[in-house]
Amino acid sequence: MLDFFKSRKLIGLDIGSHTVKVVQLQKKGERQRLESLASMQIASEIQEEADPALRNEMLAEAIKSVLKENKITCKNVVSSIAGDSVIVRYVKLPLMSEEELKNVISLEAEQYIPLAIDQVVLDFFILGEVEEEGIQKIEVLLVAAKEEIIDMHVQLLRLVGLNPIAIEVDTFALQNSYKLNYGLNEGETICLINIGAKLTTINVLEDGVTHLTRDVAVAGNNFTREIQREFDITFADAEALKKTDGKVLIESEDIMQMSIPKEDDNAARIGEAITPVLNKLVAEIQRSFDYYESSIRKKSISRIVLSGGSGKLRSLDKYLADKFDMAVEINDPFREIIIPDKEFDHEFIFEQAQKFNIGVGLALRQME
Ligand SMILES: Nc1ncnc2c1ncn2[C@@H]1O[C@H](COP(=O)(O)OP(=O)(O)OP(=O)(O)O)[C@@H](O)[C@H]1O
Ligand SMILES: [Mg+2]
Image (cartoon, rainbow, N blue to C red; front, side, top):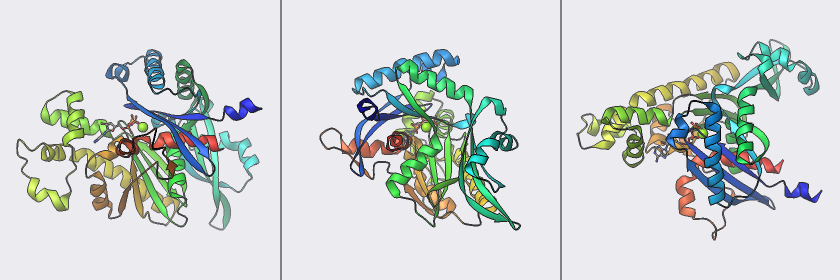
């Protein structure tokens, strides 16, 4: 029995395509305390390895060393998947109990999930009841994940020598982290946007609960590629330049001064080069808003909360605020977490916080 309680310690491991993030939390009374925090950029030869089994082996070795360097000995882990391998759909079904739905879920899911039903793992959440044309229905969030991808992920974690407790979906980790740090915001609909390297996760939360979520393949790498093209440099150099000089042009402020980029003004050149990517991203966000506001609820979204490594791109928050005419806040995943002074450098954490949002959400599983 005691061992069981001991083993409730766990790490949240967010394995992105660009960076691996590790977060260990421990519950102290009512609050969470940070125990360990680490991140590692994935070497380009690992990122580019096409053979998934070999890539897993290389990645496992790299994760092992980051855990060792940071003296993280905890073996229990919650990790996540995202992107094409996961589909989340809001559906309305005839009124039935949770038990009944369990029995018919794969039948019901078939028409909504464009994946072979026998090759996916299904899950669902009943959000509530609605009346539609005089008929009482249940609102359900249907989650389907490709079994093969989950298996691959579990295999990777085992190669690292870890003990997987659960495989979560990025978007629900975002929801959990937001709930801990900011509460449910009942009566309000907000949109969490996490911009990584390959993927942008969009999650519309109504009363703190996901009602619409999508991953779109427009993110940090697209910015980098545009910078690479504009400056005719390597991808790695473009990454570095993006971080030092990258900035989004704000129409109301910058265009006047910057419409004719000077050769030496990197920020202006970058700003112009990445504009097509930003337009695509805005269009994808707008599509999600339109879908939510027309098909799910007649409510409007009041605010955007931004996170992910690419959320650090300078002025991106202002740009989105301008485009959507709403407040854009930078998510602080450590807002309600105790960070012991002796062990952690607050300034470093403040600097890096945004990219740890999913990791924090994963580490929160220990509370359940
Ligand atoms: N200061 C910065 N300015 C702009 N972009 C940045 C900055 N710091 C990091 N990034 C970008 O953030 C991305 C990495 O963020 P993150 O760790 O959230 O991605 P990931 O989880 O590895 O990717 P994904 O989930 O999309 O597979 C990279 O594209 C990187 O270039
Ligand atoms: Mg990510």
